[in-house]
Amino acid sequence: MTWLITGGAGYIGAHVVRAMTAAGERVVVLDDLSTGNPERLADDVPLVRGPVADRALLDRVLAEHEVTGVVHLAAKKQVGESVEEPLLYYRENLGGLNVLLEAVAAAGVRSFLFSSSAAVYGVPEAELITEEAPCAPINPYGETKLAGEWLVRAAGRAHGLSTGCLRYFNVAGAAEPRLSDTGVFNVIPMFFDRLTRGEAPRIFGDDYPTPDGTGIRDYIHVADLADAHLAVARRLAGQDVPGDLTVNIGRGEGVSVRQLADLVAEVTGRGLKPETEPRRPGDAAKAVASCDRISGELGWTARHGVREMVESAWRGWLLHHPEPVAP
Image 1 (tube, rainbow, N blue to C red):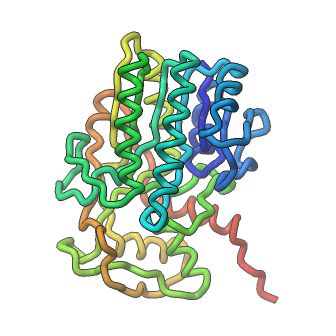
Image 2 (tube, helix red, strand yellow):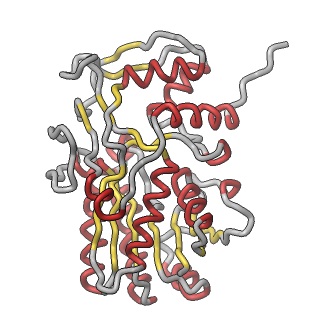
Image 3 (cartoon, helix red, strand yellow):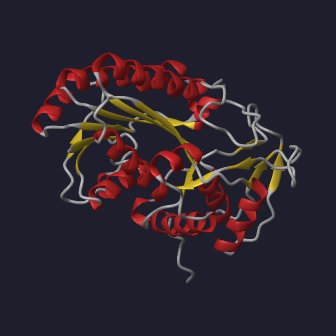
């Protein structure tokens, strides 16, 4: 088995590459390096630079590396940016996926794993969100992920592909510092960024119907997420009859934003009191995954807790954002 991993030099992608190669799987990475970093990859991992929308490049890579399965992670993923530039998101996320699936079908690849998102659910009201919950995304990013799932499953049925769609919840942490998230788009790096600049972290909304008034989220360590990719990929590769497996990837436990801010202050030793700002439009009071399906189907469960996520993320932050040494 040889797996093509698109976006494999990115934060999540590099962790997937690490998990799959450690388990003995052969991989090749395709990444345009718009946000990826080749230094995240081991020297023996083949890296092809280019976009998933380049059909000629895809045909060459699939043939030369005798690819038998694809893990598709390459995508635009910033919610706010998607609202400002929906045409970009539909072109990149769906147009690129369409070209990739055409190439995959033509090459006779039989396994396709798609990186989806809990954003497909929109603003859920359930205590625990199952995969059967209604999908009603509230931004173009979530729309492209839901439409991507539809496209992947339709291609699977038409061309005999075994397909998997992984709906990530909130990803955090790092398996090792060099693989850490270097962007400042998710809540933990946003807390780090403000604290290291001597500014109080921001909490958006403290009037939700939750125990402490702040939103509750499900956080998953990126190393656990990578292991879930490996488990689902192996399931797809082992199927005699093509089918689809759509699963949530989370811990099934909620952590409030205030609890997270307190933990970040404890881990970093920066005790600035958070500032509260108004709610952001579309934020749910609570979004926690039901992980029963992936546990029942594959025996997979998350192993890392939230403290491990924050501690490992902080080590990575300090590596990429070294603080000045006092004279």
